[in-house]
Length: 475
Picture 1 (cartoon, rainbow, N blue to C red):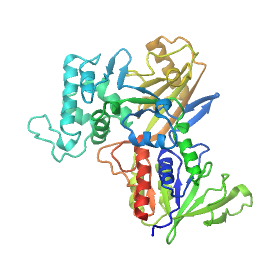
Picture 2: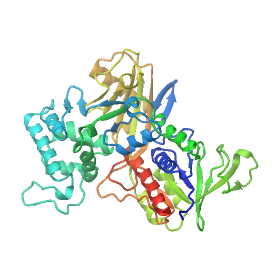
Picture 3: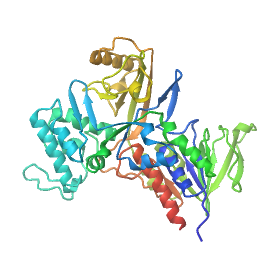
Picture 4: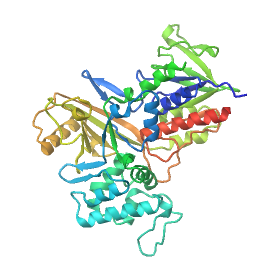
């Protein structure tokens, strides 16, 4: 007889809500605890000046099958929710690559051979490198090393992206215009630090199967509305609970279950029926200072890495998992929103800048009908971190004036700096597994073990994996 399951999920970001929705779809009782007022984690909607923004401007790729499946599962409509564009990389007045609507990988080869801003020699080098990667199944250990005397790459350990590009004679200008923007967009890690193995996983899935896998999907709605909020409604329609403004203070491992203790500063609904006790904070008698505990057969910790390490550290048997989390380095993402007059627009919905502070620009008018609203994204570490928010904004405003002739001053701007936005995706990184040493305690998040870097797809895949493991344990 299958065990009666009751799962607690800590964290209402994309990983946690994917786990919760997947469990709910299988009629497994689930309760989600999110410390913030809104769901979404590092991909969430925020309001500023009565304008709906995201805490970071993200895009999805057509190959993000699990994320797109989960959005549809909870009631989304991919055609309505996204502006879908064929693969295109535009660095204003410097480089342009546009994939035609041809079968993969022909679409990419034609795009590389016709790319504007590269010499004919650079186009041949880029196309030849892509063919080499494809013939090696996008695996480092199957790549030939072209330098004399080095032989083939069988058994090759992971290396940096910059080392891989040097081995395959991708020169500096080609790297600056094509490979570096691709790497930073995919891994949020500079090429001198980025894992070639992980980048090849992304290229394999995006560029080597269906042409539509390389499509870029720009959300028309904010990231909380896109999936987490719909997932919460989906979970609750199936009898689950989603508690926002409800942080977790501790996880306790009991004999045959886990106890989750919520922090005393949040307003929360009643505990799970039949599995509750009350803990009152010492020295306080106020109702809002009452901690509550909930008991579950299984717990999925889908909190950010620093929070996860804090919760797991006191639990016996998890020292190795905590050590792996503690060893992670992090990379920032800065997003600068600028509200210009409604007539201000960019040449494309998404466009890059070459060797500027701003890396990618998004025209929210073309994408989501928010006319005059532009978003500038600066990924990974760099000199922008040394600037104040006002200094950064003024530099971006000057770049928009110089590049596009936008003479008006923005009506307002807002800098959102996620200083620990992603883990640094370095070679041979040992990422913690979803299954911890305690069978009923699992770990979800884009930083956990998997083929992908810190992406929405990686987060969703980890959450679904946790749900799969719980179901397998109960059978």
